[in-house]
Length: 111
Image 1 (cartoon, helix red, strand yellow):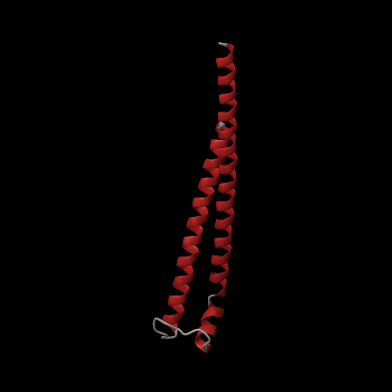
Image 2: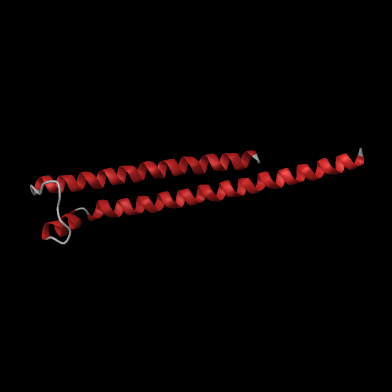
């Protein structure tokens, strides 16, 4: 495997970690927004789906929900990108091993 491949894997891994951190922060932000809404309207710990108060909460927190969705998509994209470069590196390793084995066989026959 080349040094460039290792560097690319490292960069992609760092980008994935950044995306994971952003997704976690977005999820915490959304939970905080839900909590703030419930506190503001004395809604307790649970708001049943389909109720007017639930619809109000969804409308009030729609921006945070959208940010979470974007962060989740970015994380999946970073994960796929890392997987792609890792698969490419695996192919490089396999090709190198096959070439090495072929050279070894040629050297053994020549000896």
